[in-house]
Length: 183
Image 1 (cartoon, rainbow, N blue to C red):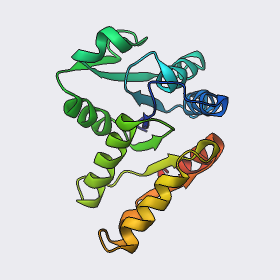
Image 2: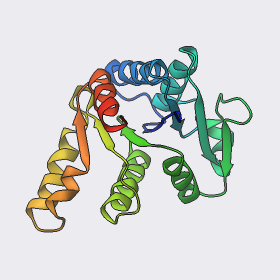
Image 3: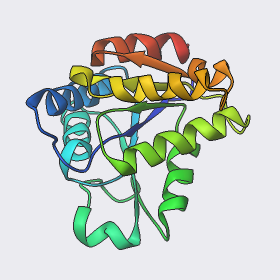
């Protein structure tokens, strides 16, 4: 049986409330507990660092991907062989999703949204069929869900766009959804 890998998109900052870091740590540890490899942005900062440190501390495997221009700012903790440096952000996103069986998005900023929307667009275009989960920690992504519903309601996307996203409220819910999707 092939080991499953889960790509996590999240902030390179900790965010305004402790719940975000708590959920990042819980998700990282839970991925390791399932025996799933964490694919992430390779940074040792913000929620990205919290998720990776928790996965590694729980004995999990990590695979970090970082563009060369971010290495001085976000250099990761991954051991050799689990760390890839790309030339561009676009290449980073491609390497991350191509090395994962599923995607989970935690709270984050513009970069996390960029990653999510590229994965979502690729799914819409049939370039992959990987599950995409949005972990709505402390209601952080509720406005995004409203926006996506609005885009669909206003005729700029088919209802299938919304169906490509699985919304969960806790790391435990994310793990349960991943167990089903990756079975």
